[in-house]
Length: 463
Image (cartoon, rainbow, N blue to C red; front, side):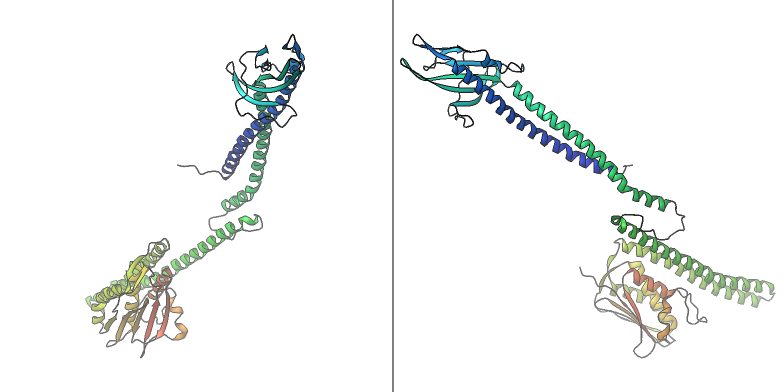
C-alpha cells in the first residue's frame, strides 16, 4: 500500500532542492568571481616581475644583456603551488635570457588598459601546463641600438585555481550552514503551524460515534476555517440523515406493528371458531392484510432504492432518457389495472422529451403517481398522463382532490388524509424524494374540471 506523503517532508524536500540549486549556482558564481579576482591579483604581480626584469636590461659591447634580480621572481616564493618562467628577447627577437620556447602572444592580442604599460596578458600552454603570460615591451634607445625588447613572464595556474576553489568552498560552506539553519527553522515553523491540525485530529478522534456537534473555530488558524466549516457541514448532513433514518425506522416499525397486530388478532379469533365459514372469512381477511403488508414492504424497499439512486445521480450515474417513452411504457403496463377499476387511462405524449435521470427511479415516480390517481378516481372517471416540453410531466384525475391546506403534508412519510382508505402513506413521499434526487420541482393543482393535477418540472437536457 502506498504510504501518503508527509506535508512536512514534502515542504522540506522542495526547499532543500531549491537551496541545492541556489548553492550550485552560487558556487559556480563564486568560482568564476574567484578566478577573476585571482587573475587580477596575480596579473599585477606578473607585471611587477616583468617590470623588475625590464629595469635590469643594459647594453654591453653593442649587445643587450639582462641582469635578472632574484627579487623579480621572489614575489611568487610564498606560493609553492605554481611555477614561474621568464624570457627576455632583444630588439631582434633573439633570446638573451630565460626559458626557451615560451609562447608569445597570439595575433590580435590587445594591449591591457588596466595598467600604464605596453603589456599584453594571455593564456597559453607551456611544457604541457596551462600558464598565464604577460608580454611587456621595453623601449631601448642607445647610440648603437634602437628598438623594443620584450620580457615575458609566465606562471602556471595552480595558484589561481586554488584561490578560486578556496573562495568557492568558503561560499558553499557558508551557504550550507545557512541552508541547514533555514531547514531547521522551516521544520520548527511547519511543526508549529501543524499543531492546530493535530489538535483538530485529536478532537475528532476523542468524540463518541454519536457526537455530531460542530467543531469550534476558535482553536485553529484562519486558513483552516474552510476545512472546519466543511467538516461541520458534512457532520450536519450526517446528523440530519441519521435523524431522518431513525424517524423513518420508527415510523416504519409503527406502521408495520399495527397491521401485524391486527392480522395476528384476526387469526387467533378465527382459530377459536369451529365453523368452516368463519375460517374462510378469517383466511380471506388475512390474505387482504398480507397484501397490504406486502405493499407496505415494497414501498419501504422503494424508499431504500430512492436513496441509492440519488447517490448514483449525485456521482454522475444519470442517463439520457426519453420521458415520453417511459410514460408510454408505464401507461401500457397500468392499462389492465385501470380497466379493472373502470377508469379510463389516457396518454398525451406526442414528441420525445429528453432529460438526464435514473430510469428505475423515474419508473417508480410514474408508477406511484398513476397508481395514486387510479386509487382515488371513482369508477367511470378519467386519468390523464401527460408529457410536454420542455420537460414537464402531469398526472390529472377526476378524484376528490386535495384541499390546498393539506397539499404540503401529503409528501410526508406515512401521512394519510383518510385513514379508512387503504394505503401506506408512502406513495407521494417516494415521489417527492425522487424529485429531489433529480432536482425537479413538484406541485399540486386543481384539475381542469375537478380532481387533482400533479405537475413535475424536470431540468431539460441541454446536450
